[in-house]
Image 1 (cartoon, helix red, strand yellow):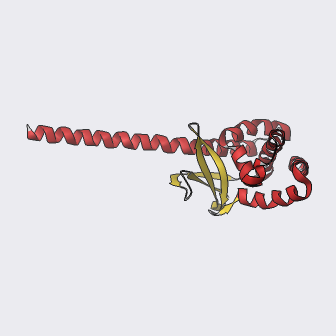
Image 2 (cartoon, helix red, strand yellow):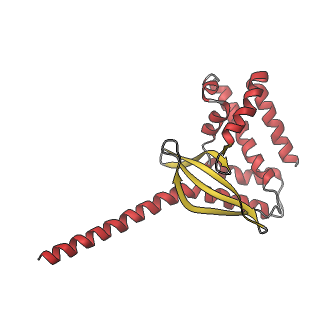
Image 3 (cartoon, helix red, strand yellow):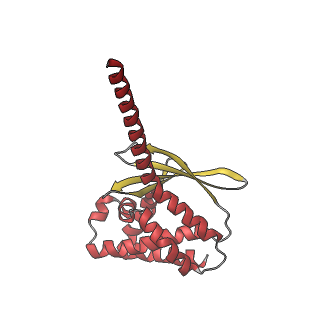
Length: 208
C-alpha cells in the first residue's frame, strides 16, 4: 500500500511538473508571438517585388498595431508629465502621426531587397523594471550573423503582450532617444511643431 501511495504521489508530481512546463511554455509563446508576427511581416515586405509605399504601409500597419502599445511608447517618448498636459485632441492627433511615423520608419529600414535576416530568440527574460518581459531578435545578413541585437520590452495589458520600448544592443532605449528629440521640438514649436516634424519625416521615408 505504501509503495502504491508513493508511486501515486510520484506520478502526480510528474504530471504537475509537465502541466507547469506546459503553462510556462504557453506563457512564453504569448510574449514572443507579437515579435514573431512583426519579424515575419518585415521579412515579407522586404522580399516583395511590387507595391508602392502606401500599399506596403497598409500591410504593415495592422501588424504594428497588434505588436505595439503605441500610446505608451508615445507617452514615454514625450515624457509622462508633458504628455499629461496635452488635451485629448492633441493626444489623438499626435498618436495618429506617431503611428504613421513608426510604420514609415520600419518601411524605410527594411526596403525591398534589403536582405535582412531575423532570428527570434526563444528565451524570454524579465525586465529589471516591474513585470515587463524582454524578447530578443537579432537582425543581420548572410554575411553578418547573428547581427544586431534588438530587445523588445513587452508589457501585458488586458491579457495581451505589447511592445512598450525597444532597446538597441541591450541598453539604448528608443523611447529615451525620441524623448530627447521630441522634447526640443515641443519646447520650440509645441504639439503642432512636433506633428509637422513627424509628418515631414514620414514624407521623407516614403520617398526614400
